Amino acid sequence: MVEWTEQERSIITNIFGNLDYEDVGSKALSRCLIVYPWTQRYFASFGNLYNAEAIKTNPNIAAHGTKVLHGLDRAVKNMDNIKATYAELSVLHSEKLHVDPDNFKLLADCLTIVIAAKLGSAFSPEIQATFQKFLAVVVSALGRQYH
Image (cartoon, rainbow, N blue to C red; front, side, top):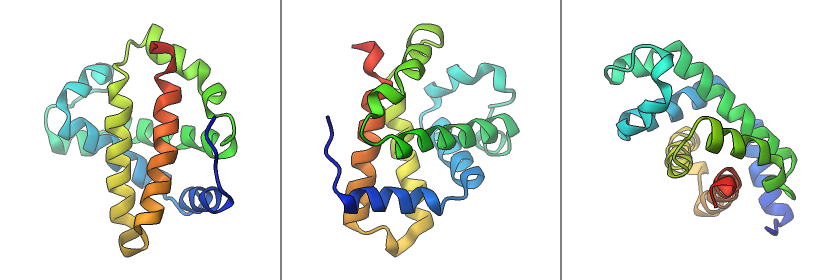
């Protein structure tokens, strides 16, 4: 079980409380698909992913990026039991969608970059460490079914 300080809880809540989900979600998923092109194979039904511009302007990618960020709300609201919160989603990604669990880490890294760019100097080392701790717990929970 992960221990969260009140300060860490506050940091995570503040980050998500001030996010533009549509903008950040779209940019994070687009970045992941562009920088790590092998991740595109899970999105074949999303239409044109031929190049970076097509990915960045694809409405299906934007919608899924937003959906992913809203999915992280579940972890924010259940920080004391993130693994149980994502148990069904872990099964879905493992058994039905056959997503490589390493892709969760890649997307978490891309999300961190996008949020760091949005927050600028407010993304202090303490905030970065807390945010990466949070995402590491989420990534672990999503990959749990694979173990």
